[in-house]
Length: 272
Image (cartoon, rainbow, N blue to C red):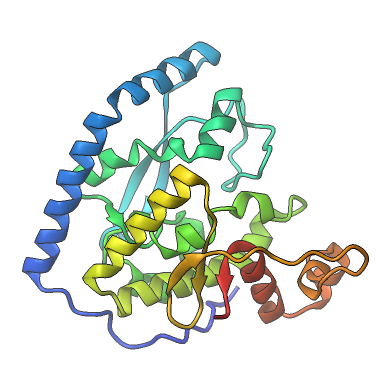
């Protein structure tokens, strides 16, 4: 599969060494405070995982990070010990343990990534670190994206917070590659090329709203602006064009652009 055509081109926005160091110091300080504050919750989650099923407490996902360096991204283990290694999860994934299903729904499985931030492997805000197999599909784009440290949260993470509920269960990897990943790449390139310091503050604020209040977030495709997602109108008898695109027989016939638009509509990326 060839890399998706990306509208943003040229060199990533320049960040001075002082600004970069300040961002790392901010990330490390906030991550340390959050880890201390969340320590009782972390201990409770560890105990719940160990009581429910055998196996390690943490899952170490292989990801490509800053400047293309591979690293292990930490998560709380959500799956049974005998689960297979498919790279994507779905809503109601049968591989989840009972505790794992709760962790996935609340995003609490991401808490250990604060340790990755302490180790300067990740940032609080930045492009989402991807599996090496997915990075290889858009290698040229990721060479630019990984000029910054990958983040726990970001525009792509907020826009696709409901990803597990939208992926086609018949072939989630193909659907992800065709309809979701190109949009994540575009949003991450926008972050790298047009980053402003206040962007991180806005993204962190919307992340708090999304996680704490379960408020869905929309990301404007033209400007990258964040807002509360508008409720989608429902029809009783006639499915919308986007809904029809998600029928298996229709998806085979449509082009990559149509699949991309359908995925954006369902997952919180808006045309503006």
